Image (cartoon, rainbow, N blue to C red):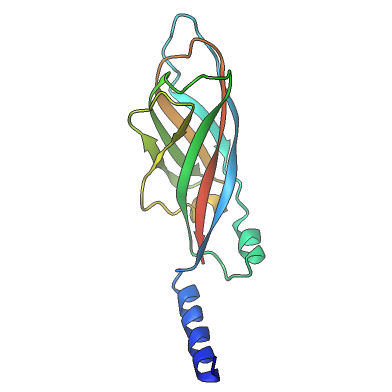
Length: 166
């Protein structure tokens, strides 16, 4: 490649970085959650679970050798039944995930209006929510659900995937 083309590639790369076009994904586990069983099928409590979203964006961008993050967008949330074997999320009718942090408005970030009777589910992402200010202030993700208590105690976990734009 000639010096002229190398210079153009360098300028184009710099412009892409400056515009926040370059991004990379970060996965964060959702810790194991427990939903107590109820043989009578009582209604679920409104709050299903809550956990801190602890992504060290500064160290992630440093590890990728990029500039500072300009935004962080939710890319995916998946939940998977761990036990008992063969159980599904049939006890849930709908599921909503919210992000909150000190001094910031609580925002919906993902939802599933009709939860399929499956052992693993992926939520629909609500577009346009920048998680960066939430993560910088100690973000918490919480889930609300409608449905009934499962017949037996269910354990599940999952993962959150966030795209960081630099």
